[in-house]
Image (cartoon, rainbow over all chains, first blue to last red; front, side, top):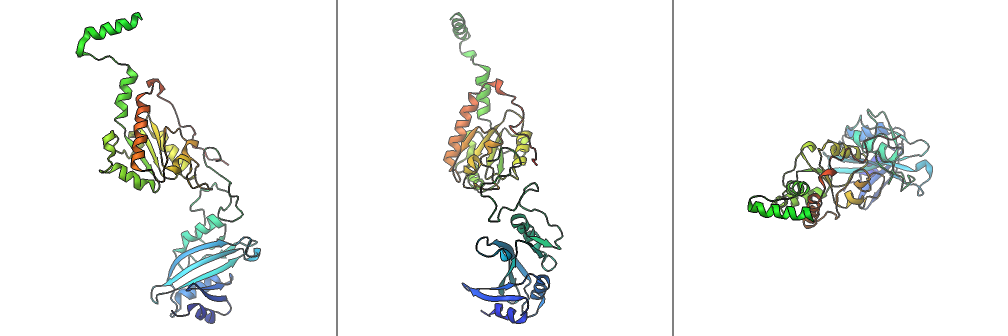
Amino acid sequence: MADIANKIKRMFPDAVVSADTVLGEQHVVVNKAGILEFMRRLRDDESLLFNFMMDLTAVDYLGKKPADARFEVVYNLYSLRHNHRIRVKVPVSLADPTIDSVTQVWKAADWFEREVWDLYGIVFNGHPNLKRILLYEEFVGHPLRKDYPLKKRQPLVGPEN
Amino acid sequence: MGVEMEEKNLEAALGDSVILTTIDAIIGWGRKYSFFTYPFITACCGMEFMSVAGPRYDIDRFGAALPRFSPRQADILLVVGTISHKQAPILIKVYNQMAEPKWVFAYGACVCSGGMYDNYSTVQGIDTILPVDIYVPGCPPRPEIVFDGLIKLQELVANERSSKWPRGAAAYTPRVKR
């Protein structure tokens, strides 16, 4: 398996914070600033060609990481041409829970970003239709944040149970 | 006593040509083997429902074979699978579209109580939003227990007073809070 993570780190020394392989899966940690251009180059560079965005999700590290890196937006990318994969992790702070949308790079990101907004409350700048996708519009808060009260209920009809 | 004697004499006088019964009994008897179900299927219990409806277990043996895919033609609302808060107003709308008399069959643990989904998204038992007539727990319930529930529902329907119907609207009217 080629060391894609370190190759990306050499290609983008300013953007990439670290590169590592965990349990045989490679990832890079990337700065939030300039993420859109970074992703576009991952897709278009001839030696990388990550043309398939397989998954986009987020993690809440409440109590495990400081508030300025509380969230992590995670992109799982795959290249159909080269048959290689990379996981891109982007720390996002609680004070500014925003990140540029990658819907311009991969259209598939549309619904994934809406899901992350719905459940984690991370805003994707430049998203064409950033509204809740799984929960209802009347829902208040973002339930996959670790500080969302476990027993809080917001039914549309009927008693709170 | 006088009336009873008269009825007995009447029945004896009429012989085998006439059977006397009550309106409630004959309506209940007619209804209990003629269930038309509306399967509101949302989750994995639906797989087990297919087994219930299929030839091996064969719900047709109990007179409830034909699912009606319009609530207006159904008299049992089979709620099969987890109901989320987002779906709850839809379920009530379906229930309100059914013509009376109508009964609600809670199929599976999630529908009875929320099951293992004690979380922000799941209705903790549809009896919080609808009048449920029969609860069949299980995750998913085996076909045998579904038939046990169906036969109990038949007993319930057979013994109902016809004055119970019409009952009116659902327990809760769809209304968005906040």
